[in-house]
Length: 116
Image (tube, rainbow, N blue to C red):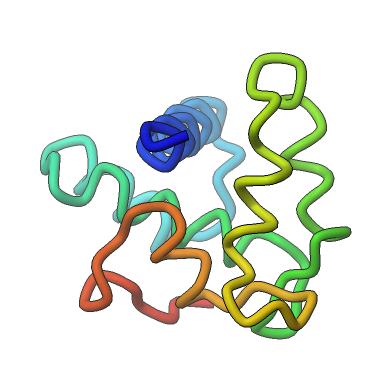
């Protein structure tokens, strides 16, 4: 479970790269950020984590229900994803903020930026 945040962030990076390659990454800013992340290992996990949060339908909070589209395909390979994401909701209010999301996926507080 300790390695899961890094694995998930790396998976998001790979998804983001693939979307860029297929020209399906929405927004020029995200294309510029993935280009930067491909050149800078420090940004490699930061930008994809923020991008995925912004890509989900939400009102600055993400419910567990809103996470189903990204968790469903991964559950067969990563059975710990559901308890992991439940643990991201640190204040147990039923939704995850970008700060909770970033910290849960291994970002430092200064790396978490609102870009949505």
